[in-house]
Image (cartoon, rainbow, N blue to C red):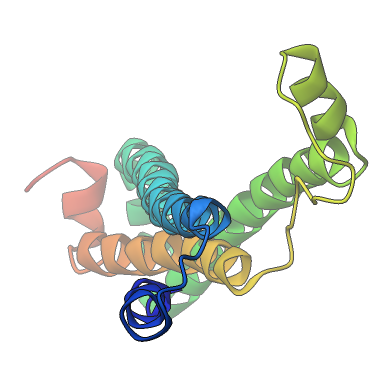
Length: 176
């Protein structure tokens, strides 16, 4: 598509032949729109991953602030920092994983079964039957899933390591 304009000018100059450019312009416009739609989709995915991970990390951070006394008590009874970090990080990872499975199961139920196509028709969008309206198994989908799992997990590790540097008394009596 990039060299069609030059080819059309060359034909006009050399052979005095004109080419109907309507179909080519339509494909060029479709190509431009597809590129813009991909860029918009990437930005939406990045924004949604950022929003989800921010929500999860803030939720876990406030949870750890509430249970600071319990963590101090566990340390006072002799639990190692390493065991506390591994236990709480695995619990957090399980919660995030369960939420992720539930959300993607819902998304697959709506998109993968064809319900999304019917919903689009109901709101007046003309959907061609040969076009897939839902494609879950893409590289960007894998990156999204990994990001939603890994970023909160790393945040939990960092928060717990920071919290558990304090002595049990500091944690129990809220001394900073």
